[in-house]
Image (cartoon, rainbow, N blue to C red; front, top):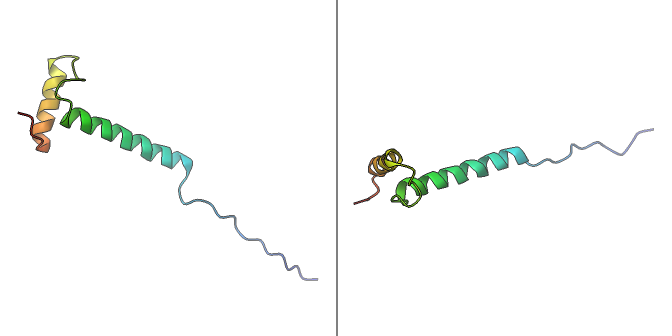
Length: 67
């Protein structure tokens, strides 16, 4: 007797949940970094003059007008 039921592979999503969360976390970190470098102007980075100068130089490097 021949069986008419065939076994089909189960459809799986192209990406995994771990990959999705990794991508979302990376986008969030890059967005925060872009904010701190481009738009912060010292409002958040008050932890010292060194951090302020690094952010200031980052603005110049990216071509963001800062003064």
